[in-house]
Image (cartoon, rainbow, N blue to C red):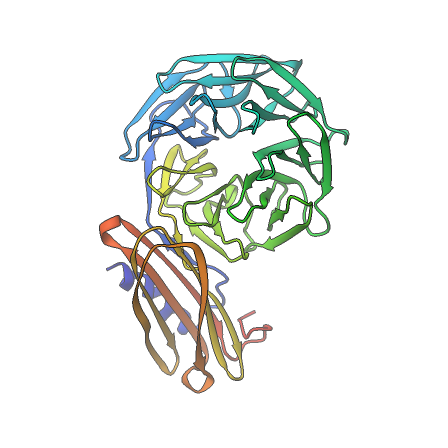
Length: 417
């Protein structure tokens, strides 16, 4: 049934629909947040559940969808982090005072005020020194708090840099974004800061995560935010173009060896492999405005919907399909990743007919790997649609990808314009 529904759009395309740059589907489950509001952060807890922010509440959701809530004295306003003390840490503000919060899995809450008033702390991460490090957006500082509550602040050299995202790097340092400064910062455990420009093509770096490739990955804050950035520990920056509606939110590494990010106002969750192949999955709830996301203990991606009032679960798999046409034929590139054994199938349909390209069994593919299929020019004509699916019914995993190309189009690869 799922495959039949997915193929129907192909027939419409072959009948003359203009152009599709991306259109993917995935198995996405949503769980309603019955208390609180305006969720922003989520993190995997040490108890096998996910913990998330919800206004003056911290919520806990099991992988089966059971939710419980704990009150906190201020509104958290960014991502959460698991501390070395097995507590959950978060940041926020109350009556103009910047606050760092800590909650145990038993629901016990402690709060610590930042030395600078109106510091507006946002993201938080665990450092190699066993302390928590966080950005102070309004104060232009990087903050550090020990698990016993001792705080210290480190001024960022660039004035008014507006630090937002922060994450621990593979080099033992903490990395952070400077949204207004258009820089990526690095701070050692002793407080020494170095800054790197993001370069041409990138603007307003926002949220940040450590990638599975040993580099740091970051999103853009400004609209239209059309790129995902990558910076090595030596400071070399590259970027990858998203779809025209690719405004990005937070970013996290997935269990499938790819990076996942939220699409904010454009209502999707996206996946990018370390080679830059992007797939975007629309969320079921309109105007969901997804923000925070995290890899769950079940191998799936979990995310919060700030506007939709839901927690969503997304199966962590992807196909990363790309089409490239020349006179010699159509090349179909795949960048496949999945956390469980599955059946992988693909079909191609054009004006001269079509059918199944292959059906094969694959084991867990982590990290993703690339492969390709080439169809001779004589076997295709006009609009060509390629559909591929990965599914494991026993594991509850399903993801698909489809693209179209016009073999007589005007684009550099034959695509419709």
